[in-house]
Amino acid sequence: MLERLFFWLITSLQALSRSRFIALNLFLAFIPLALSIWLFKIAKSRSWFWWLGLLTFIAFLPNAPYVLTDTIHLINFIRSGYSIWIITLILIPQYMLFITAGFGAYVISIMNLGDYLKQQGKSRFIIPCELILHFLSATGIFLGRFQRFNSWDFLTKPMDVFTTGIENFYNPTTVLIICITFMVLTVLYWLGKQVAIGLSLRLQQARGLRF
Image (cartoon, rainbow, N blue to C red):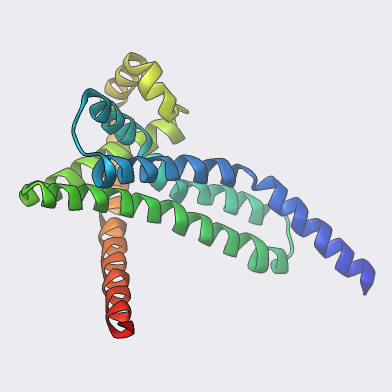
């Protein structure tokens, strides 16, 4: 019994260690969230530094929904021969939390932009901006997953990213992948936004009852 328990523990730790990239990907996913708080909640004026921060926000934003594509690693783990208990109790919950946190950062980041536009009296631009960001994020996910670019490349090698993106847009398969990703992001964002709004209203009600 103790030997089996020890073996299960070692195997669980091994599975977790192979998923250590999750910490880095979550860090990258929370960068646009932190930037959105500063840009749209804290900053008092739109200086050149603010605009630089906005460009950085757009460049890093695809990292948040990019976590959706990391499910391929979960599939690979399942195919690696781990027991059903490791998969059910360790790997699946780990990836569910990972994806929820990463995509949640994406939803809140864009919602912060929407709140900012509303405060500026430009509510009519909220939906167009959301759709543009979904499209840019879908393109960024494609360039990251299939062309292996990262967010730093958007800032340090913009011409390489731009040239590669234009070249790939002549490929119908690329266009199809980006369009499907765009639609998935749009639907999941809308659902996540409704959940966030509902939780916010429930929290406000709870605070009202408390006082």
